[in-house]
Image (cartoon, rainbow over all chains, first blue to last red; front, side, top):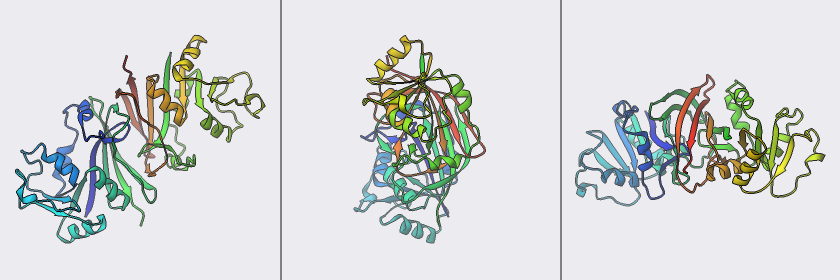
Amino acid sequence: MKASVFVGTSVDGFIARLDGGLDFLERGGSEPHGYEEFIAQVDTIVIGRKTFEFVLSFTPPWPYGTKRVVVLSSTHLNLSTLPGVPKDTVEQMSGPPSEIVARLAASGAQHLYVDGGVTVQRFLSAGLIQNLTITRVPVLIGEGIPLFGSLPTDLLLNHIATRHYPNGLVQSEYEIINPK
Amino acid sequence: MKASVFVGTSVDGFIARLDGGLDFLERGGSEPHGYEEFIAQVDTIVIGRKTFEFVLSFTPPWPYGTKRVVVLSSTHLNLSTLPGVPKDTVEQMSGPPSEIVARLAASGAQHLYVDGGVTVQRFLSAGLIQNLTITRVPVLIGEGIPLFGSLPTDLLLNHIATRHYPNGLVQSEYEIINPK
């Protein structure tokens, strides 16, 4: 099993403004930049509660089709009562990232898409992300919710590919060399 | 006159470790990545005191040839007594970035290379940088001295070019659209 992050940031590394706003990402326009190809390779989405609630604010349509969606939250979410949320593919989990990954691997997950600010930082810090694709939108916003946080140790990256798009998006894909 | 930043960072956006260490940049190896071509276009280096002292720790050789070097410090530096520092091309200035730029423009500077963590942040924040070249070294270090800081307003960027190198360096060049 592997776990991937696929995320857009400002050039100064923010995934959202402090209030959660994503307006600055629109500077990239709506040009396709590989999300469809990426999500097609994923069978399970692991998403933090806040980002899940943000996604819900745009639902319907439900964006994840029939893929399994695991919402991470330490407080109980009444998922079955949420309008527009498929009951049979969405579940809640809580616990340390290593436990989440072990449970998902045991239940047949092959490729996780890990999403959400806190969640990405926790999984990176735990050495549980193998693939990182960052799409940088050509703007500096000065403050916001950062993609990256503290780490127990350096994480070495292998550069896989970098693409750039006419609207100024620069997308770099890395393999993460997690320490044993 | 224009002012440029040309800087290396970790993928998580740090220009140095908290203690000033740059060891992680070595992951990029010594492959040329355009610094010589960049510095050849510059006539004046504007550098913060801390970064200047770091540069001095590798002097001799003096790295800036006969180019004018302006060290920014609000406390007096006894530059003439520093071994290896050319007396006729190095001077100290202090004051807000707008004053520094005005003084340098008035004295004939055409293209400034603005360097040093605090200095780059102050000049960016003041809307005084026109060209930004970031070379990202394939490593996450988790904490350190960040390239970017807070801004009074978003700064929109025009993507000029992105290059990547066999050792995994990814270099993006942007023009900064400073608000009027």
